[in-house]
Length: 213
Image 1 (cartoon, one colour):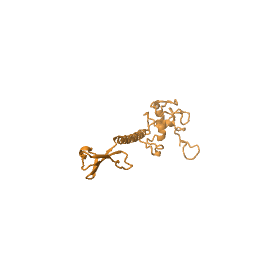
Image 2: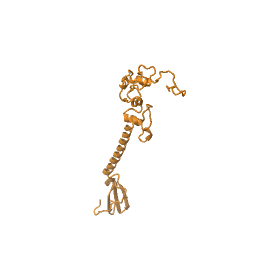
Image 3: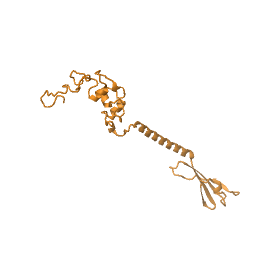
Image 4: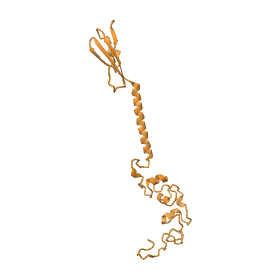
């Protein structure tokens, strides 16, 4: 810089109000010659211009790295929160149900006689008709007062008729009633445990339909 050159402070460059991430510095040079070398005196990212030969201005524009970092951090926080929320929904609906579909609750996907909502209440698997693997459908167990999550129910005999629950299910008899058809014979010894007439044709009311039906 030549002797006698005067450097005066100059008003900062004007920016729009929606650009808060920038800071501005400016020097106004008065001299017979341009004594400041912009390339050597200014960072590579600076913006330089000369209004005229005897009066130049040097305007430096840089980003506020702290504010920019904060914005990136906030954006990452939002994305992370969204990811965790979606993961939670995915985990909650790992059974294949859609949390946005109200018809899921009344459906019976595994055909065991229990709706999906009832399966959830019982703690059974809505995609498996026999959650405990004892050979008895979940719906049948629930309707007969058994535990659909206890694999030992299949071999139990709550009515004491000599038939296990699995045998009662196979024969269509009531696991809680030793004489399902009420003919005075135990289900275990009755050849027709669901027919009080033991297979004989009878039509008590004369309507042409056997009593067995």
